Image (cartoon, rainbow, N blue to C red; front, side, top):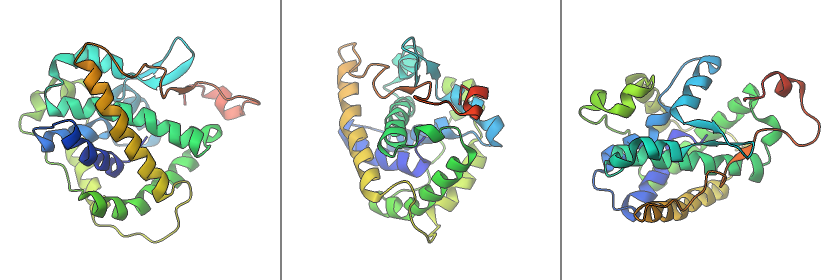
Length: 233
């Protein structure tokens, strides 16, 4: 999934295009689905829940923004929920870049891959925060009373405290899996596709189908042993 700083960069691109009134709530909603911390084995199932992870009839996997929409369609005029909704779409698009454009599908679920990706995220942070003016999102008043907050095991204060490092660090090194150009393409695609989805919703329709940007639930060719043991990674 995309990093929190990448999500906030997309939020900065989308805010004016979507006519967002409360940018602080929108930015916070953009990172709320990821506010789950802990060891990988504990964090993974909880983040699947907060991202509405779904196995489709087609046999492919997606973060089910349709299900979120059905649960909260009357709340999408609230920029907190709008930010959450488009976060799910962004992560679906991101997985297309990660697994197909970068070619990492066969390494899906590897702890080593996550470590490599996080190193890339840290290297990208200074570039993105300066380009998009990224700041630490403010916690909305009354968050504890919001339905979406009460639904999942979010760790808001801990997450924001950890995020402070993203906004000050200047690590050294070379990007391994991403380039600035590729991340720029990803952000641009999100900024192009998501307004079309929101415009279609005004007419009671989705611009995107659930199969759009879904990923395979299997590996083509020879299956790895660890995948056979953990097919839901």
